[in-house]
Image 1 (cartoon, rainbow, N blue to C red):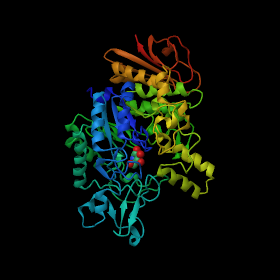
Image 2: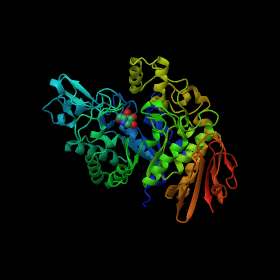
Image 3: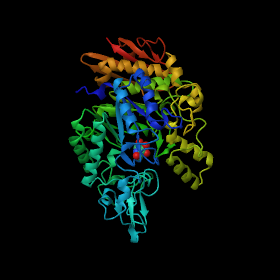
Image 4: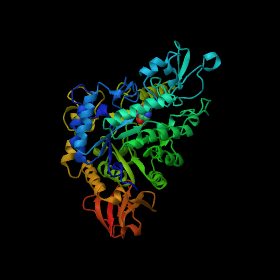
Length: 545
Ligand code: NOJ
């Protein structure tokens, strides 16, 4: 296996609007990020993934880009970006940008021009005449954000396709000019010193046909555009023309991806993909409906992907998900132990680990939960209003929105115990989580037993121990609540053992008699040898002799 930079380095995802505000306008910015590079270098990460920082009207907070070659003025300038890249480089950190090319913003020049039927840009998007004398959308597809995936524009006399909000029209990748333009964008940033791209919803870009889809409770039409042959061909082209010409990394966001397609996406297309199976184990039909979490499910799912793919993009959180301790750990009594156990999962599986900002502090979902006046994400408003329309009581509707509320992960980074958690000197654009007096970077940096200190130690260990970076993955068969595996490399071997649950569990004999010296554990002074039980969320990383 090659030893590319992304194999031995961890990625840290920043949602720029909420990371650090340098100018007091209540919105995080590039200079704010630059001011925290020492914090990130000290933590031990090697790559930053920036959620979109391009010019955008912010209907979907940057995932609607109106100019791919400039920076959102709220975040700074191109010069600030150049300086961030240079300052990061000085600290051994590379920067990956978000590439959002399934759709643009409806304010993008291409889309504005596309409204003229004789413009070459008309064919950049899916403009179609509707059914029934143009009175109904061209097909029955629904958008990921709810409602029809088509919007009618009277002045054009046609409908356009948007798999997300109406402000996010889909590009038509059948048009070779679209490929040419996107390649120009890729080169523009790579030539500026960017290390690669996280490719947004990249397995949906090729619409094979515009036929009606099978009716589904959530997103009708997917069978016509998820992971189609044309999709793979486009990525092969981008890889051949651009990615393979640079020392760069690419990771695809691939909803609903299966192993077969994931293997294809990672063969001369992208370096790795985000699969979503483990994000659904505590969901029932729709993301608003929670179901009981079973640790066994998490283990089975992670093992399946570890065994099935040579190199995974490992993550437990991102800007679209609620916080992981709330889902897979214990936000109460065992907040600290479970946070460290989840860090052990994230950083010892084979693949590139992705830490989401604040995850290293054990940040939690908003409590008391957001009210509709406080929601910033348009999806939350849509879901809440729809539930109310169907006569769900307000309290229940609030709770259901909370279950999948993306604002939970988008609250400001908690830097210290001062006003607004040290995120801004102004008024934050979104509410700061009131728990910042307890959970904040300053307090955790000073505390050797904190979740952050554990992340730091684990990141350092992962860097220097080739078993944890390049080593093979060998699962060990145990009961559902325990997750255990070996990572071996060139004759050396590590053993990782974890209790995924809050209950005391019995260890199989084979594990507690293992001749293993503890490299890291989330309980002070614990040893694995001759240990018969694991305490709540107890976890070990050991060297086998
Ligand atoms: C996936 C992104 O992660 C999400 O935040 C965004 O809303 C959609 N794609 C649309 O771009």
